[in-house]
Length: 209
Image (cartoon, rainbow, N blue to C red; front, side, top):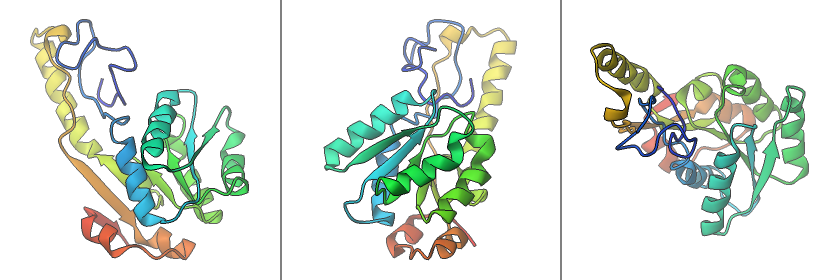
């Protein structure tokens, strides 16, 4: 596995240090960084308006992580589950109807290929959206915070090499990410009429113009 959101929670391995089966590789630890994304989103969009959390059937644990992180800060989050393709456009309209001031997106195999569509809908509805991988920001998403996915793909090749040379997956500890990046899309911010906080721009690893 090269990009499991949380392999222990998903049941792929018994523990990160001792996988104990036929799975090993790299973890994105996406659940553990959910709180950080919420905090950055609050810097981007201050205030007390609710944050809509958009997720699909693979992201229930992500929703619970967001719910827990928000509770610790006294913030309100709204669950918006995508159950079918036709929900894509309506989910942003619903977020607006419920008074959400921003959106936290769950990365998934369903959402990722449609990242440009999601980014355009967020801009159309003027809903600042936070994503967890750089390709979302490169496709027009406003802001992303997460692992350097290119680095993850490169490291995955090391695991393949070791296994092909005889190492057993259960003996290879799951590698956790060491490099995270904050990407801000200034062009999308301007399209939404959103002023970016100077503190965010200073912290950003890259600003897409």
